Image (cartoon, rainbow, N blue to C red; front, side):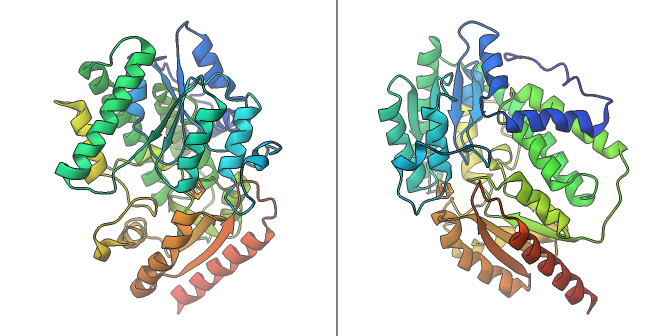
Length: 401
Ligand code: SF4
């Protein structure tokens, strides 16, 4: 294993508490101390930041670099300079990301990837180039055509360009063997994340949504091997603990794929009576739905996985109109959910444009839903608690009828 190989997280046998305390520290730390320490531990190490939703972290890992998820500033960062770069009527993540940059919190980051998700992120990539001319910046384009001989060729070229660039930054090309080894490491991580999600869907009182989120969020800053060990520790401890089962309804939380909701919002949903049994938070950890083959051409395998085995989301084009929104119906059935909560960042074009179409699909399938908006720094949870609580009560009444 090429990176800091995991010897466990040091929290084994101490219940979920110690693991969660560590995750909370990582979550709260807007200086990214863990990533800074990783970089400082060996001369020549490099860190590559990436924004939501998806980048092929395998390629960064194969170059011996640390992929660092940059997910905005949350509700603890005061945005002072970032506001000056954007108009008012726009989501908050680009402004808080600019704030992270200009305040020096990302001064150890050697490169930034901006995946194609919306115009805001695309424009941010251009701004980053101007603001930080010494940093490698790439607008990472993703295919919106899923034919192997069209979008597939396009995406292979994108992947190959990224591979070449990172090899040049390292000073040595990334080999196929390195890529295949990294694919295996990420397959293992995806397997553990899948186990965590399955465990929560089966017994949501044993793995509250805010805890699962913190465990996943740690994977944005830790080396993947360490993160896999951490998930394993949490799962083992959560399975061993006995927690009370509440009379909550089960919901799928959706549209939270980019700007992250405040942790308090996730906690509020459960306090209001809704167990989250599936969500689209931190999708980079679950974007690919099957193992990527670690045999043969690794770039071709990554492209194939994106084209044919990746999740559906409003930020990804759905060429088959009959399939539009069906993923939500499937998620509800798979997890035994009783309703869907659309929680979209304010001013988020991909989430808000798709929402009426997705709601129509749910309506036809007889699945209840509610919708609200948030910003990463929303502080007032009472309206959300009331809305989610009323939703939970009405579901219980309907299902009892
Ligand atoms: S929150 Fe929505 S609009 Fe804002 S950057 Fe993310 S995807 Fe784009």
